[in-house]
Length: 288
Length: 286
Image 1 (cartoon, helix red, strand yellow):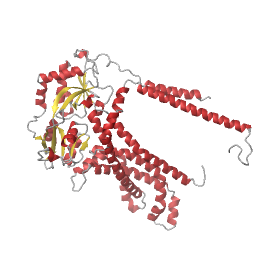
Image 2 (cartoon, rainbow over the protein chains, first blue to last red):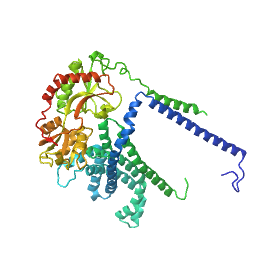
Image 3 (tube, one colour):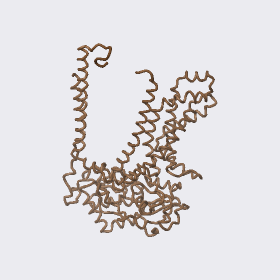
Image 4 (cartoon, rainbow over the protein chains, first blue to last red):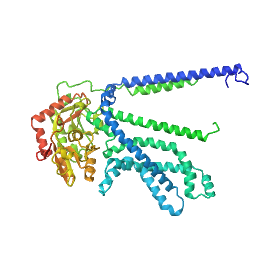
């Protein structure tokens, strides 16, 4: 609807006035938004920097030299977090999907499997991760069985997989149940078996539906891998803690926190991209 | 147009709310700062006529017996009461409070006059808090359980290839990484309790703790505990425990004087004799 579009009459004076009014209003609200943001930022800045404790807070939490000293160790620790994240992430998806499928099995003979899966989800979704970590990390090795791992890396990853697969199983189950029953009925009427229906018809749609939720859980997992430090693994959080203990300066925590944020940003963008792609696909050919 | 006053009001209220929580003048602490006298009446303590002493929860033996610092039993509990007495406070005027490690070292007002919890004095930490004169000088020791790979080690080199652990934020950990310098990364625990558990589980071969704790753990807590030995070179300045006070606390000088007096008249040595096992029979690892 541009002015003087071919085949269109020139807009009336009334329409031009309307447009000018709208443009003025939008300029004005931009300016107001800008102004209020600046006022808020200045007030917040002044309040923080002129508070009586600010110099202490600045040297305790934002000391450049402390950050520089602690950075290499924290970065080395973060690599451990990334390893746990990658190994754990894959195991969580596989195990979670398996449990979700068990929970959605039909048929009276399979009741024990369903019960088992339900019990698993109830237990590990309800148990605080830190307690699962302690029980797995210090309890399993206490059995002193031959061949059982004692490394905090393996045990910590195991505990995280147990907890997160319970969450992810529920996400998958929600996805599976979000597929309309008519899809299943149609597949069965075509002669597909239950297994084929699941694999060819239900799961592809289910996974697509819950991808944003899964990526959200992945970001949560990224932070929670920091908890394996309670088992003795020297990860980013623990490296920061060691540096804090030596100097009584909290800057290393801030450094570790920022590194975790940096780690989470790409996943967040990927999640946004996946969601946008799904929207485009579902709305292809029409605009809403 | 009609909305604008509302929007402005919201903004103003927000700004007010934000600024309202800031300009608090901490009352009391700026006035009296170490004006010479150390009598209770002149000391700017947290609570008037009361000496508020902090330690962590739980507190461990042999520093505090049965996690009850008010009993005066255990070396640190006894030292706290001795310091209080030296300053002129009666036993009833000593109030105990529990403060976790991180809040003890964080900036800001502290809920205690001093904290006694095996804080090692070092120059980095002195940027953040005040320390009194040292009330104990500890050496670090390596302990293990019978049958572990570390049993029978006679030198630091024997330990270097084993899996060793220590508690985070302790001198034990510093000594482990800097002096013993093991070939595999040290395992770092939240508490000595976790470290003990891992030692019993075989997740680590040995752990590093300070010597009095080593005697206590191996004799009272582990079924088959063994002291491998004490680390001869426990860091360049030794491991001196000081009472921890808020940075620039007006009490630091008085508390230090009290500790110095207790050191000079032999009280500290007596209390060590009473509560901490003798270090003489632990072999030295070089």
